[in-house]
Image 1 (cartoon, rainbow, N blue to C red):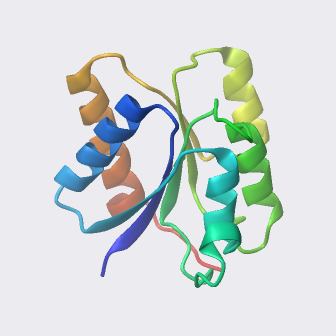
Image 2: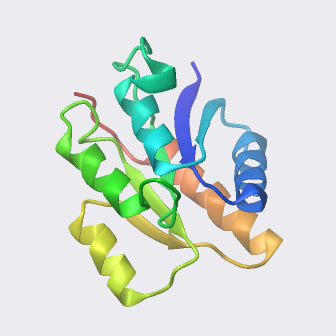
Image 3: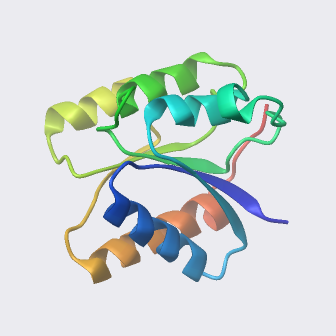
Length: 144
């Protein structure tokens, strides 16, 4: 059975590297990409272009960038936590920011993890591989 991962990223280079890394770990996954915050919420809540999607099947985790068009990552996170459909879905903030204030805002809003995007290709892929392994094979998740 494929596990579902929602990647919310607007930077094409980061997105390509993220998707390639997630696909190469050997864990069977289905990756859904949202390029802005509004599209992410449409997918999660089965609205807009995703109207009719089975919202009982939520992602195993969401990789969420902080700085997104239309709706910020923090606003997306708050909406995820406020909705009974998604309130327990693990959300990993994967961001270029290393600001303490951003980290605090994410954790106060319900993020499960705050991960700084490494600059180098090798360190980025290693960190992302560790995240995927942890959230899909080590962590025990509950479903609503």
